[in-house]
Image (cartoon, rainbow over all chains, first blue to last red; front, side, top):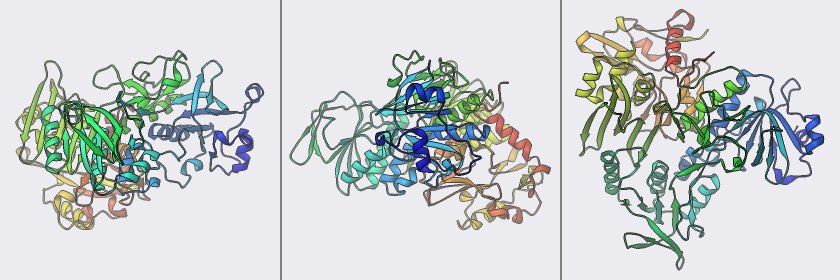
Length: 458
Length: 158
């Protein structure tokens, strides 16, 4: 089978473009085929009805939804990394040792995608030509499509600080990064973590679990500033400090240089530190540079409408690279979280097969466990004009509930120290449930969220 | 057609036997906080509401899972593989019903698994407020429609 596909794709003589995995074995299953006219024109050209650029959660969810709604159409996924489709979100748990690298694979390695006749081809798309409806691959070759989904995800941002190219400075983004970090972050290793945002805090948990001595450097004056207000962010900071982690907020790394056996890290608070490893988690940006000059509408990410269509016909976008409808603001936002990625993938696929489906928009939300303190964040926790809010603080026990309302609907929520029924906050916000008399009850006791949800939906 | 839980709050007396039976069946002793079914009390109305997972067809929890730890078993229940769950809790915020929860003792999430086809809560309920019946004869489809309405916009536009 494998040999057959290599011949089919014309890759037998071109190892650089990688390998293709598929499990299709029955002759009745859909197969990729060369488009004769294209093949004459462009040589090594694969054709598939549906091409998905990317192999993360948005891509896998889209591929499976496509197959569920179109038993025949050929589906090709392009994976830029040398691994089966996997979830980056799971990488920190490889570092904690909870799972092996295989544990990050979105559909295991049992070829369940192949069984659905979804082909995964290892190649990086470097150019899109919407006129000929084709993509070019790094190292040669390419493919053509009838419908295209761009789900290229995001990449970590490297801040303009000298020395971040030195060996021993890593992002924690790919499986390769995880291997490099695991190599250096052993028991007692001195580590500087740049960035205490959401991703930084997940990595923080993983590094601490490995017994590393951690110093966190965050430019903002609180932890997870885009997920939590100052009160909750500072409670998280105090919790971490109580666990023996050094947290420097309102601080920047000004330079990294090679010392003897260690890296010397200088900070703008006038101090410096010798460490074994520097982990950089200072934000991510959508992978859209390969679309420059194509004429596709982009802002922070690729702009898509409620059907996940881009400004170019037959081209859709989903996941971290897409700036899609925002449930709360009615504008377009990049919400780089897995629930949004899979929602995007699902709705894009429905529209790609022609089952017109309108996406209500993504709700920004997050959940974090910072060395045992669970925090959640939903929707417009910053509040809305003319809205009301309620705050319940128990500093000693690290418990916090903050709710924001617009009229008698919940529009945002923050919690610390709560792990039961947290999903009802999404339910209340996203269904725009009218709380009626329950709003006053919540203003009195915001912890009655689950009761409010159940009472109002009955 | 598969069986599913049918809950009739009007018959619930709030005795909590379902809650204790659930936590016991799942090896968590008699611990209400670790029960997969909960009873909500609305005392000013004299009303008790048993509450658990409806086993969604397009399940948010399953889609949100980064490690493929949630799958559908032969009874139509969405079940969590403890070996694959890393305790990231993303499913707990993705589920708009709040019926998948984190258990700090195990570091894994827990949810109703229909006990492999013989739910302990049903056996324990003395008033038939919780029954396990053919899905087509229950209000289950109605619940699923309600679930779909709560979806991030799953209603077709045309």
